[in-house]
Length: 151
Image (tube, rainbow, N blue to C red; front, side):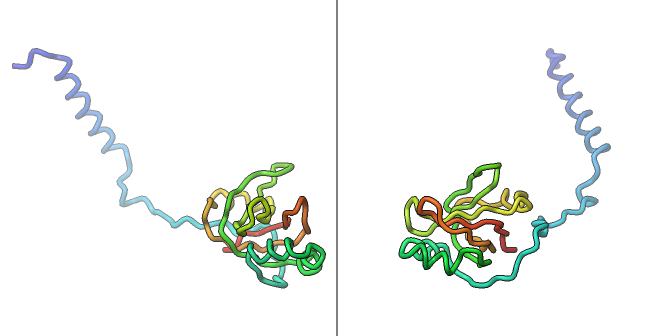
């Protein structure tokens, strides 16, 4: 015979708890699971005027900033590359830095504020496509604004 009433009480309480959980929780087969989708951009994606890679963009600005400005500044372009890191800039604007093989000169791409919810899913090393408006060079780094993440 069991001389420990606490042990017996714990077993009875556990069984009663499992029965109550089974009765009151809906069964899993009644729950619909939808695939995760990224939201559509609130900012209209402008027509792409040219396509490039992050390394080509950085090389162009390293070789000749005036020639690169003539090609990219004020134009809408699509750029592809691997994310080096992400950070926030002035006014809590999120920017993405793509690997370009040029230490401390990797281009920065400031995201459109409507892209915050999508930026949450991005991470280091991911390959992305961004549609941006070229904004020139600052401190030797190519800057682009109004970037929308490709879907």
